[in-house]
Image (tube, rainbow, N blue to C red; front, side, top):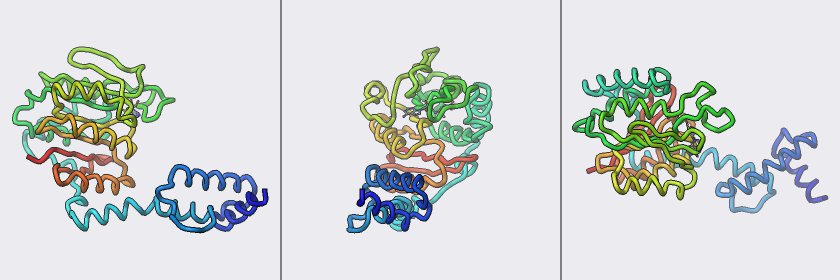
Length: 290
Ligand SMILES: C[S@@+](CC[C@H](N)C(=O)[O-])C[C@H]1O[C@@H](n2cnc3c(N)ncnc32)[C@H](O)[C@@H]1O
């Protein structure tokens, strides 16, 4: 008891909000969470646990931005960004973008008017020698309308909206979707869907064996939108992308960009990458260098 009290009194010195007992209990919970879940960042040093936890949080906040600075020092390209309009430079890309915007909007996907990703996809498809020959596209994130689940599309969300837009745009493609919500899996003309939890690499087994038979021209991550889950999707995609295939990671938030600049630096020796600002979000693109 006395050690708990002294921990609490130390905490109220370190965390100024821990002045009444309820707040002190909360502060204690925070300290325990930092030690349990963010141990990587806690100093390997002596000191009061509340003080170490506080330094752990500071370290968690600073580490990725500093790693991004380090990456940019060695590879300045990792800090370069483009707008969607700058990326979509070709006439074919612009024509594709117009058509894709219509299809995204018609099917109820947020990739068109809402998020402004159509110029990015328009240009990606223009970079294939023949868009009609894009045969295999996979998107993680089908679009659940179940508002009790993370990363839902709202009650009016239409599962499969973007899959249908891609299917209609690509005349010969087999389009696959994958999602953690089994309730929205469906099959229809040239679309199949599969269960996947992008935080569980083992759950990619079925998609991995399909990709081994027929590598994917495009893999899109529009799932959970957390950096560790993104890395799960990237690890999977690198194994199953066709030689000229593209990986697209959507909806990066500004505060997470340092993590993606580091990912660019890691990929750099074998992949060309772009960070693109489109509408309210950012996208990471990667394609294997020939
Ligand atoms: C933004 S929605 C996808 C929207 C859809 N791509 C579109 O444009 O119409 C995100 C989806 O990611 C799924 N999701 C959330 N966590 C996931 C995880 N760990 N693994 C796979 N999918 C996940 C959600 O169930 C949701 O359906």
